[in-house]
Length: 125
Picture (cartoon, rainbow, N blue to C red):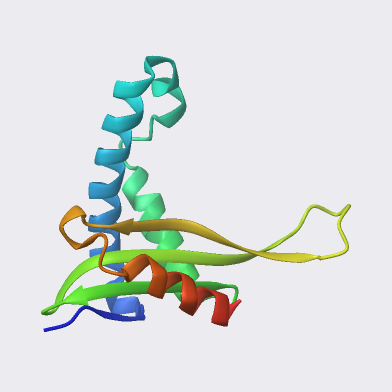
């Protein structure tokens, strides 16, 4: 079965949070191992996943957020979170689009998932 990319639903929130935990563990190990001075800057609260869960659920309901998931055979293998935010007030363009999070499990990288996420996000922005 091919990898399917779709807009996330509220029912996906818990799986997105689990993927985020995986993402943060890998990110923290990579950053902390490459530069010990950054370790204090990436420390999260022990219950940070609860705040992230609320963040995901809030953004799943927001018209200023676009969350996508990638699935292979019913298993979530990636997600991304895109937001529309206010720009710095010195610029003529008042709103900007940004990728807040993007994570794809290593086994599924280099299969065009992030490109599909990007294309969908640009269309949404």
